[in-house]
Image (cartoon, rainbow, N blue to C red):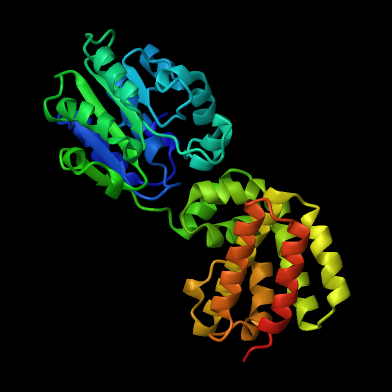
Amino acid sequence: MKFADIPGHEDIKRRLREMVDSDRIPHALLLEGPSGAGKYMLARALAQYIHCTNRSGGDSCGKCAACLQHQSFNHIDTFYSFPVVKDGVTISDDYIDLYRDFLKESPYMDFTRWLEMLGNINAQPRIYVDEGNELLRRLSYMTRRSRFKVVLMWLPERMNDDTANKLLKLVEEPFGDTLFVMTSDNPRLILPTIYSRTQRVLVRRYNDDELRNILVAGGASQQQADDLAHIAEGDMNLALRLATHSNDQQQHFELFTSLMRLAYARKVADLRAWSLKTADLGREKCMEFIGYACRMVRESFLMHLHDERLLTMSAAEHQFVAKFYPFINEKNVEDMIAMFDRARTEIAGNGSAKIVLFDVAVRIIMLIRRK
């Protein structure tokens, strides 16, 4: 990964380059900021720049042996540390092949995708104490090819306390040839004793124009890029997820508009057919739809404020909500959101989606007419 491969963040790239060029690289660097901002790509580019043997023009060459090894995630003096599921094996290196595939597929580090690849979407991956022991062991060896060993740690906030305490001494009194480069989505959860000993760099979200340009460069149409940039609010992971599931989003939109129109018209028989059709999508899809419906209700309520900056909708969604929003007001919005939340919990707990969704549809008949 070269700096030139990363869209935007020119100020941060310049700052990272200056650290290396001036030989003032902090022994523990933390890139912190929201998910989908490209923090880990910056960390990877920094590690490659440190190890490159033919740097020029403020970037790694991309051609030397060190750069080629970085591009294949095989540099001998680079260590990857990341959250894993506790299933007998709790060391990152035992998941390294899967992690390499993840890095190729999701350079912006979509945590949801990592859970899917681990095979357990409901898991809570952690960095366990075994990982701390293994890092201590491996870092005690001399560097093989480079001046520095670099540990790229993804999500240090997911270290348990034992792991954090194990690594604290390394961060307080590091080996002279060891650098920690960490990236965090939620730095408030990092053990304070470690957080206070890092040099921190804030990586902001992409703005809408930057996100739009990235999506267009990636092959999206201008209209699709406009819609995704507005909805994703600078989160590249969310934008890519929405682009990948654009058919699902369109289906959710059609189901939501149909539900609200039928409920307003009090067509109970048609609502029964709607609930059966929606339930046939399966449990996960039903839960995704309910999440979408909650968002659309919130957007409709925000429309009362007449401030477009607060809205995150596609053009089609905006067109519908512009007419629909008077029916979502302070007298029904809380009850409607609570109803959807309860429905999602019931379906997640193996409740009958057909019954739950029909109950939702009937309740909306009453709620939508509150004024």
